[in-house]
Amino acid sequence: MEFSITDLSYSYAAGIPPSLDGISTAMNSAEITGLAGANGSGKTTLIRILLGQLVDFKGTYSINKKTISDVTGSVCAKYAIGYSPDTPILDEVLTPHEIASMVALMHETPKNVFDSDIAFFKETLDIGDWWHRKTCQQLSHGMRKKVSIALAYLANPAFVILDEPVNGLDPVAVAGLRRLVVAKKNSGIGALVVSHILDFIEKCADTVVLLCYSKLIFSGSLSLLKSEHPSKATLEEIYLSLFGLQSQIEPPVH
Image (cartoon, rainbow, N blue to C red; front, side, top):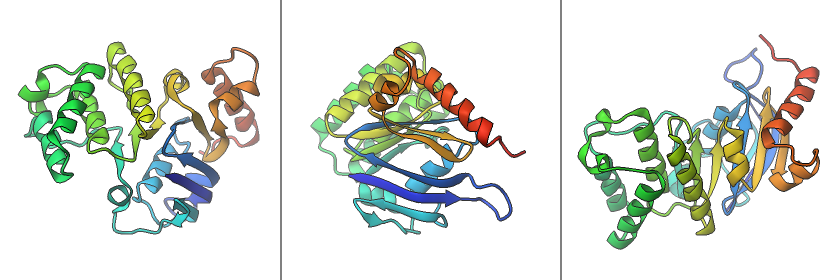
């Protein structure tokens, strides 16, 4: 599945600087794409457009070369896109297992597939017996994050969008999340990983999209980006270099 946006701009109100300004990039659902940028660079706006939550943008957004202009909120269902938001939204009175079981039932997921997925999530995300025992209102932020990530991958999606998935996770779970994302990619489920933790993106992404002050400063393969900069430079060092060049040209508007 191919996602493509061309000359895309979006402003939340007339007379204010756009949150996205002339962005053109593409993503392949078979890959892991890392999306990074400073606060206010337009990451959340781009996610909302990809999910079909914002539709009054300028430019074009297409999936498999079909222009997306859906206003019914059915993009995720139609194209089998899983989503884990920065702040998880869960049914507070149900346990994680009860929610997962309902999702599996809705999608008619075979029991053996469901059981295998849950076992893998428990292993990689370091999920304990609270998965069955505690209601979501009793969970810590990190636990809620793990539930949200697991739910995004349930029911065999074609692609997932993970917004700040590392936030709230302990080091063991972060390492496990990386294993999970890569393993799912190898089984055909790619991801858009949105994170301020550039080290995490560097260790799992095939391609990267870097934003700065609503503009695109790089879109392409991580290997190409690294080849264009000094040997052994980390993604964080490269981003800071690109961010500095961009900020000299277009300082933020206050």
